[in-house]
Length: 264
Ligand code: NDP
Image (tube, rainbow, N blue to C red):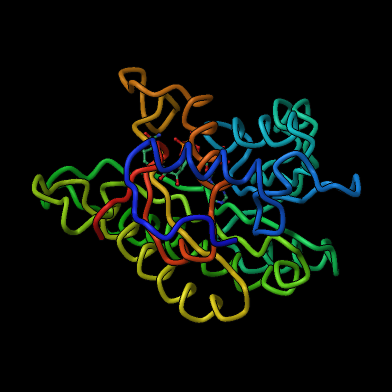
C-alpha cells in the first residue's frame, strides 16, 4: 500500500496512515485490523505476552478479532493471557529447543504479524556495576532471542499475508540519542536489535515484508516501574496504530509508539 509520498512526522503521520488504512484496501496489515473481509482473521504471535506490554497487546488484538498466539515461559502461570482469549504457547527465547518446539507445534500455520516483545532490563547503571553474566543474559534475551524466533518462524511468516515483523526496542537503543550513558548491556542489546532489524528489512523487503523497530514509551510495567508515565493500554494502542498504518515504504524504520520517527 503506497498511501503517501510526502514525509509527515509526529502523531499526525500515524493518524493519516490509520485513516488511509480504513479507506483503502489491498495493503500489508492495514486491511486486516479487524480480520479480513472473508471473515478469517489475521494471526499475530507475541513473545513475552504473559505480562506487561505483551499482555496488553494480546488483549487488544484479541478484542479486535485477531487470532492471538501469546507466548509465555511458564504457560501454566499465564492465566491473564489465557483469559484474554489468546492461545498460550511455551517459549523461552534463549532456549533453542523451546524455539524449535514452538515452530514444530505451529507446523505450517500462517502468521501475519510477529511481535518480538520479550525483554529484560538488568540494572547496570555504571561500568562498575556491570555483571558479565547479566550482560550476556540481556544480549541473549533482547538481541539473540528475536533472531532465534524470527528465523524459526520465517516459514510461517512467509505463509501469512501480513508479512510484518515488529521488534520492540527502546529509545535507549538509539546511538544518536545516547547523550546520557548508563543502562549498560540494555542499550547495546537494543542497538544490536535495531541493526538486526535493518538487515532483516534488507533481506526480506524484496519478498514483501515490512520489518520495523518500535519504542513503546516509558511504560508502567514491572520493567518500567510505578513512576512510568505511559499506561500499558496506551502503549499497546499506539503500537497497534503504528503497525496498522505501515506500508512497504516503512520497511526498516524506527518508531515511537506515538508514531514519530526515531534517529538510529
Ligand atoms: P515486563 O518486564 O513487564 O515483561 C517482560 C516480558 O518478557 C515477560 O512476559 C517475561 O516473561 C518475558 N521474558 C523475559 N525473559 C524472557 C525469555 N528468556 N523468554 C521469553 N520471554 C521472556 O516488560 P515490559 O512489558 O515493560 O517490556 C516489553 C518490551 O518493551 C521489552 O522488550 C522491553 O525492553 C521494551 N521496553 C519497555 C519499556 C518500559 O518502560 N516498560 C521501555 C522501552 C522498551 P516472564 O514473566 O516469564 O519473566
